[in-house]
Length: 158
Image (tube, rainbow, N blue to C red):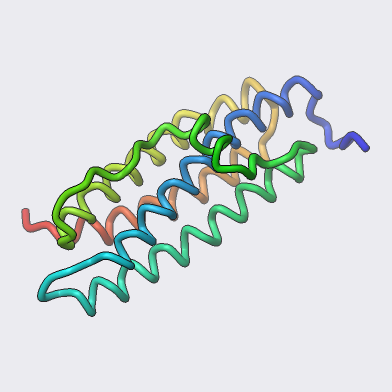
C-alpha cells in the first residue's frame, strides 16, 4: 500500500534514491570499520580494537535507521552486496599496514565524505522534495558522523 504522508510519489522516490546511496555508504563504512577491528596490529592493539568495536556498533545502528527511513517513505532498502557496491560513493580499503593511524585516516576520510553527502541533501530534501522529516533525520545523522569523525581525528596531533 502506498503511503499517504503528504509527499508526492516522485519526491518520495527521489529521496529514497539518495537514501539508498547513503545506506550503501554506511554499509561499506561499517564493513571497513569491522575490518579495522578484526585486523588492527601494533602496540595500541587492545585500545584500538575496543575503539573500532564501538565505532562499528554505532554504524550498525545508523545503517539500520537509514534502511528503516527508506521503508517509512514507502520504498525497499537495498539489501544485497551487488546493490551496495553499485550505489556506494566509497571505495574498498587499500591494502597496507594494519596500524591504527592507517585505518583511522581512511575511516575519517569516509566519514567526511558521508558528512558532505548528508549536508548536500539537507536543503533539497526539505525544499525541493518537501520531505522535512527526512531532512531533519539526516541532519541528526550528520551530527553523529561529525562526532565519530572528531573521535577519529583526535588521534592525530596538530
